[in-house]
Image 1: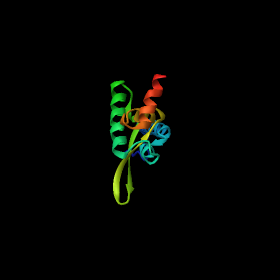
Image 2 (image 1 turned 135 degrees about the vertical axis):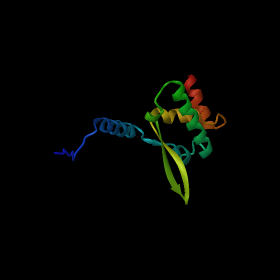
Image 3 (image 1 turned 60 degrees about the vertical axis):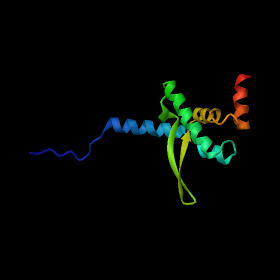
Image 4 (image 1 turned 180 degrees about the vertical axis):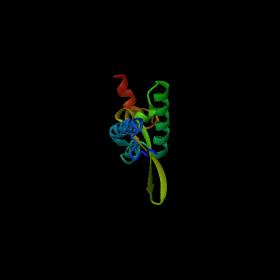
Length: 112
């Protein structure tokens, strides 16, 4: 006699999926919104994201909880964008080009 399992339930996978969904809910912002709002240029935003991710790694903060790569197609060109948590959005703005007046203002406000 053979036993056939028709339904298997992987609890670890289900918990991982739940955790990923919870994380995704917190990623409310898109990095390209900083570009379209005029705060950062596209290249500046990409560099600021990399620096912000490096800060998280150095501080032993799980990068995946705050950054997720997504891809957009604009005018036939595939662009990498990022979904960001509230903290990640602030880090990206703080790590923009210091010659950008908006970034400089944010950095100076931290000192007050």
